[in-house]
Length: 244
Image (cartoon, rainbow, N blue to C red; front, side, top):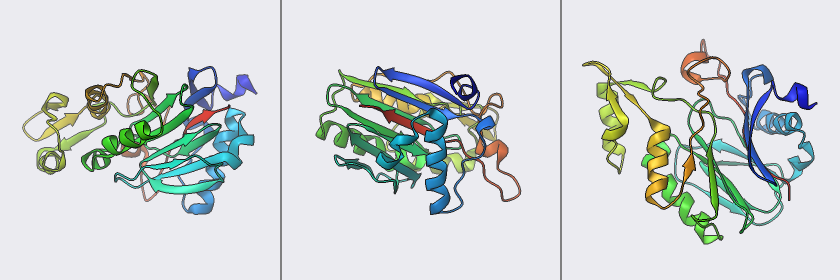
């Protein structure tokens, strides 16, 4: 099982009782066409990791590109949450289905809380990071005891925008993003979204570890800008799992 699994997902140990990870292309397409498929895909992802027994204590996050963040102190049922952040206490798991946007895994062992943040630029413009950190700290999270890992996401090579569209992004951002923008030519710019998120977390006193794996450079992971074609969409399954 372990030998086969390493070709299906990348695992990033957080501490001795928590891990985060993301499936590879070789594990298949996890894009959910409907609610039933979302539940089936989440169960499949946990089965690949060997933690399928946690499915009855799992949350399924469907990205909403806003600032909604949920917390659960009770046992999860396999419920779906349309939001951009989930925090939970104790044993359990969160599964979501990214196509390239940064997914950030949080763990505070001292408070025994775990969480996942979806970092699209639209969610960031809606102040999702601030919403997440307020709730994180409300339930015991602390910058000094929180471990933060980025899962594989697009680098600046995958986020290239024409100038007109990008100016609209800039207008929505409540931050100065110039340090993370590179002018490619007179018509296009690239944007380092993960590094931008990392700086925002740093400003709030949190230390985050950027993942070296990239979904747009190479072909290990699905990337929506490259792989979505002819009406078909392809997504990875990202997860955080706490076993005790």
